[in-house]
Amino acid sequence: MIIAFAVAPVVLVTLLIGLRGVAAMRTTSDFLVASRRVSPLLNSAAVSGEYLSAASFLGVAGLVVKDGIGSLWYPVGFTAGYIAMLVLVAAPMRRSGALTVPDFAEARLASPALRRVTAVVILVIGGLYLVPQFRTAGLVLSAVSNSPYWVGVVVAGAGVAITLALGGMRAATYVQAFQFVLKLVLFIVPAVWLLIQVGPQVRDEAVHPVEFTRFDHDTRVVFRVGTTLTIPEPTTVHIGAAERTVDGSWDVPQGSTVVFPKGAHVPEVTGEARPGGTGWERPLLDLQGAGHPLLGTWALVVALALGTMGLPHVIMRFHTSPDGRAARRTAALTVGLLSVFYLFPGIYGVLGRVLVPQLYLSGATDIAVVALPAQVDAGWPGSTFTALLTAGAFAAFLATSLGLVLVVSGAISYDLLPGGLGQLRFTVVAASAAVVLLALQAIRLDAGVLVTWGFTVAASTFCPLLVLGIWWSRLTVAGAMTGVLVGLFASSGAIAGTLLGLPVTGWLAILVAQPAPWSVPLAFTTMIAVSLRGRPPSWARTAMLRLHLNEDRLETPADRLRALREATRTSETRT
Image (cartoon, rainbow, N blue to C red; front, top):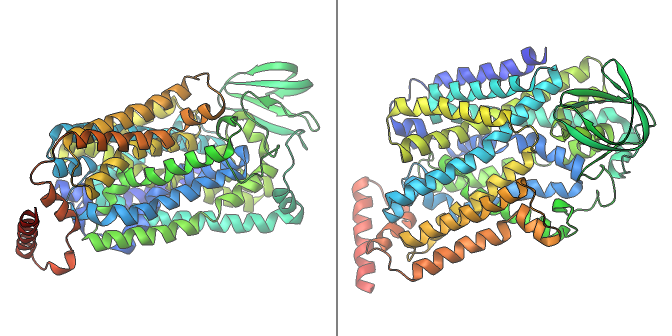
């Protein structure tokens, strides 16, 4: 029923809007940047729809349930990044005339090799960002409809592939703007209903957290992945129709449905603290349980704020603006729209800690948002709001995935293996299929963690490249290439170490799990140091001037060319 009344309409409307882009798509520019004719208001709604991913719609609330109030620094970082982008990147990037980040890299430094390297970075960022979208789609659909995990993954992948193959960026723009409005409504209305419905006692418990130590009712937990629990006392549980007494360490098999009796001690999960425990209400984030919450919080905010500047699907969106002023207005409007949305994840998080804390046992706190209505009302109102939130969640998966698959396909078919419109369409389908296969193996990983790692790689590679490429005329090809590679290997190496369980503790564990505080300065320093040992090309100042020319005074292409020549001649005279 949920699939029919919640997911199917969202996917169907997405496909119908995608058809609208078919007639207007004749060139690569149409496919990638909608011929640069998107107004600031429509573009800001599309950017917001694209940016509000599974990590925003579901992941933040899930992290609050599991890790506490400090997780609300995630939306702070998500939104703050647009202020830096507004000041440093938005307008100059649009004036560059580039279609993609690799396109900008080659236009600025005339290096096909740098273009290929940045295209590879896009594939890494795209993979880290796309996998959690499809993974959470599978989790949500399986939670609300009891369908297999793979069904939601495949539905999300098919919807994205078909929409983009039909309509490209123009279709994606309309879809994402529509889905932003849809997500905003379907996130706010259920939140208000939940606050009214739960009553004063639950609201009081939400703001006065108590550690989740005993089940207050018979509690059903679905373990979609195998988990090791530590049972503090002998407990009789029901596994399907069978009854079993467990004690000590217990390896719960994948796919098990376990009912814990009322009054039983809550098991411990290796490496996880129980929701509501000591420090849960602290307004800082203790990454890796390392005991350095201030460092952990700063590490996260640095990654998110600087990573936003380097996200390739967001950067590409500014190229759809008619000019630099429109790009700047788009960034400013986006800050306002995102700020409205991010007022509400905390509500779902604190209510989830009271009503569905058991989700932490199975590592499924990402679905807390869609699990809440049924806990409050078992009748048709609860089912209705579950359906609405599921529809909003799928809108989040699709909107973000559209932009990401588009930039990944552009990196392959426009930067690495240049081809025409037909090849772009084929690459969209192939890229979607590849991400589906990866997502099927990623059920154990948190969406918020994976997305944050995508930001980290972007902050360590594209942020230095864009900031120095736009604002420093002495940047050289060797400096840019070395800095991007150093940032890529530093950030991805630390991420690999975390996945492999590198045995580090304390502040070092934080800097391995979230390397942005050192990988970003390392990339900047490398770019500057290597560039200072070389000499920038003779036309570097001309390239810089193009990024900063005042467009308001340029009425025609001939005027633009004349102004560029005069500015170049003036700079050469001064030199």
